[in-house]
Image 1 (cartoon, rainbow, N blue to C red):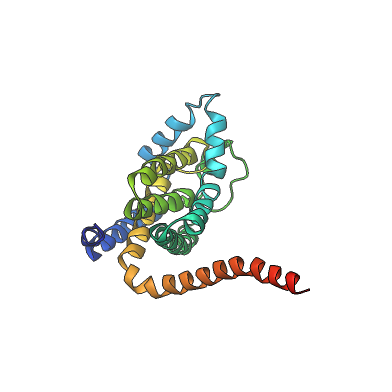
Image 2 (image 1 turned 90 degrees about the vertical axis):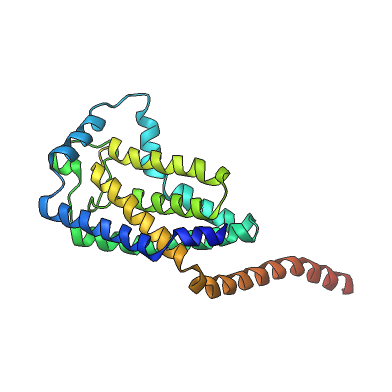
Length: 234
């Protein structure tokens, strides 16, 4: 199965996703984000709020990224078998690449958020920073793609749905244009596939971390026994 996945994740696929993100970014830089289709889609979503849905969208927007994906990665490493630890390592590696790529992209693009352009009040008024690409869509997209590559259906189906819901919520609350979210998923897919494609090069780092982790567990298991022996000698 792993060999088949690696065959699918060819260098051409990674390059294509990266090139597609760059082309989209150049177009956004030239024409801005307040073009007809982008503005129309944003306003359609933003102007069709439902009061009973608003709290859920706010929670997803504020907490659906780091409060889901950081604990998930941590638990996969701490509680999981080796295959789960592998997934956790690749997730963490992809997140690091995504954060660097996302911050660099935001700095270079410098696009304002839609509520700033259209003089609207977002449902999450504490939004700061530039709009393109969506950092939330970038991280959850990276996570969803990596989970689909490394874990079973029972993991990637609900987590992909969560990632899509978080991405939609960013438009719903008024924090991002639709193109921001599309760009976030493009860049996130690139980051996940890139890290997955170089897993063999990263394996020494994972092996070293596994060795450190096993020594930590061994120390935690043997320490209480040592303390008991000392107490008996006294």
